[in-house]
Image 1 (cartoon, helix red, strand yellow):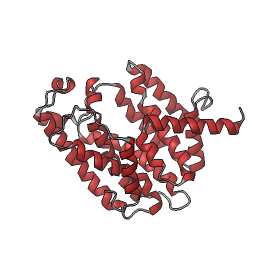
Image 2: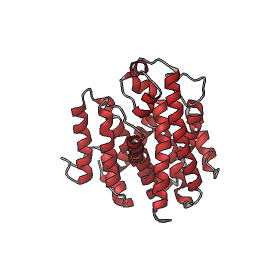
Image 3: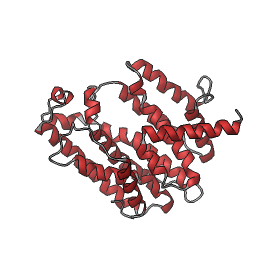
Image 4: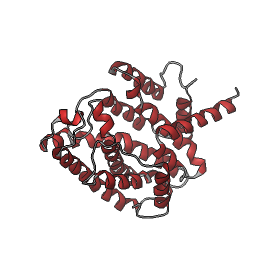
Length: 290
């Protein structure tokens, strides 16, 4: 296979992976300039590879080994480099062509080591940086790709990305509660859970209680504070980077549904692909993103 054919194959592999593993991010790339979609899909495919390590291993150590390979790749010390791994090949290409910093990607990997263990998320002072270094980092890097040639990434973009990362991350945490609790993992801040008197065994067994719903309401309310700040500040950002924040529209919609008083938090949360595309389309044409 020629280098050109291999490159095209790697790009197609990443697109397929993201479409199946993370349709939200795949759909969001459709509203970015066509020439930017390939590096954006590379970033999303890399994230999908990191996130799914937890489901591919039964013990933490093999998971840490897999994550370490990606860390070594970014440091240029991985055995075999990116050869034979289409996601790695596309990621290194995106880094080189768009001058992306490696440090946020490395911190993202380190943050996901938490996924391999069933330790409780202590409190907001730990959860917020965790979400900023995972969801927020992807938004920030997406903005860097979109800004190239139009406007340089700024501290303002980074600041909004951190807020947006918390919003998107909390929406995902609440939506994934049935799945995570079934494997005895909880990303909700433990101090909030304990303050409301939640019994963790009831949570892990899928029992919807008033205490759990109160804890979820507090977490969602905190996320909405970040949402308000992000939406207020997005108006001042360069137009070129706005597509990086389209995920906020999905998170805003999801938080409204997830916080409905009558909803059982252990009911699997679903959003159709049509609803995803419609929400993103409307947000792409609406300045407020709501």
